[in-house]
Amino acid sequence: MTTSGFKPRGHILNRLIDICCKSPHLVFTQFDKIPQPDIVARTTMLAAYSASRKLDMALEVFNTTPLSYDKRHLLEEILTMSRILLQFLIITTFFFVSSTLSVDQKSWIAPRVQMRVISGVPNNPKPLLLHCKSKDDDLGTHVLKTGEELDWHFGLDFFFRSVFICSFNWDSKEQIIVVFKQRFLYYYDRCNWLVKPDGFYFNTGGSNWVKKHDWT
Image (tube, rainbow, N blue to C red; front, side, top):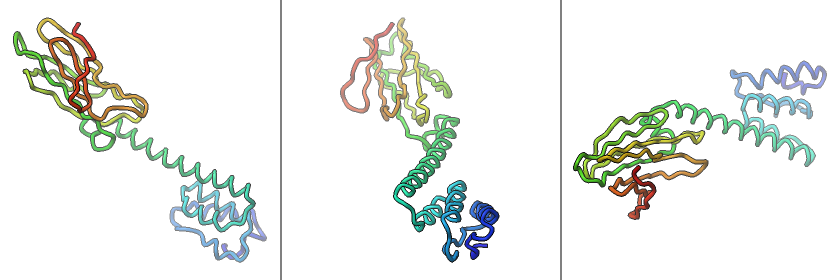
């Protein structure tokens, strides 16, 4: 088949080479053994390899095919887009799987955020009571004495939907705060909250605390 050069029965042989290039049982077609492979034969192989995501083989055919500048430039763009699309599909699948996992499972698959809530309020009349959760994960209710902290980490959502909310109760005061909300291509990988009698303070790992909220 390959030694014919696709010349006499072009439409039949082009169909055969299309099947051959797409077959998972063949490594590649020996296009270099065709005596005088015409542009139609090479185009068929190029299209078949690209459709089968055999991009390295498609590039090999493309790089040995004499073309005008315009046609070569166009095909380069097509091959580049094929590669980008393949990478996008892989990444999308990767993060879709990560979005179905729990907090602990996500931590090794996606970019990770470390959270910490520290109690800076007196234990009298009662210690700090807090309850933190996201759409998919509920960390439960915790009681923190002065100086104690609640730590957890989680993997970011590919579609920028990661949100954690905490409710706080101390003395006769209460408050509900969004302690983390993911934004497009921007997030803190470390979020620290310090709860004090006069309100809620935040930093991202440094020594300076910035007041963000008051008690209600």
